[in-house]
Image (cartoon, rainbow, N blue to C red; front, side):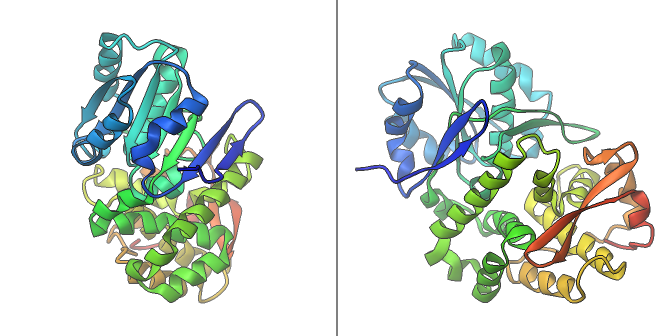
Length: 355
């Protein structure tokens, strides 16, 4: 079967292809041969994903020497404490700098695998095979890799790009509805910040089932949107900050509940709506934008309030990576499809109330 044309991320010192094809998981070895000529592979996955897709991937990679590291599913796996166990297993498997790690799973596994690849032996190649909508449209592309600390999310990390990203939309068929909605938060985010046409498509669909006929195109548009931003701002110093829309409050909410209540997408959904509501009250966003956003988030069963007094979240917000010298780079909407960086501080949230 011939390969489709990939989306290519091209940076100054690195470039890598992103393929989006149905059934691609079963043909993974065909794509690996184009970017890597080693023999040994370690698959890093979790105990939700590996039982479903591990065998198919291992069958595809039958000509390689493969082993696997399977972690408990959930944000807790992306902790600093997970690293010694993973490094120990890589050493036991004899993994060298000429070998390869594959991330098979969602955003947690992708972030963690990338960080392991960046730090083990000062860097070995890795490949992303994202199996959730959130990872396919967002976290698998762009080279941000990280682990969490008790004090906050993604506080230890690096910029380290994969050699290849393989996106198989068919893996979404086994996702529970909550995980689909989780990913839709990032799809909606991209529409909010950059693509009013995409946002309108989502708004008109009113449900994920209605979007399924357009799914490959939606994934492609999201990935290509992120590719363009990453190429223009690879180290998150300018335009790429727009991708953090909803994340300042979202990360604080996740941390507040120790990653046990809201998923990442749910927390980002709350963050997007609440920061838009606050900005609209301050005359920084076009009137009616928050209501439109709330309607779409609600259609996809995403929450818009955490029920927490904003004052209780300020400690988490103060630790946010976007808080530089007590100045916050907040991502706001002028209107749907147009976003900007608003330089402020914690006073922005002074009268926010319950978020």
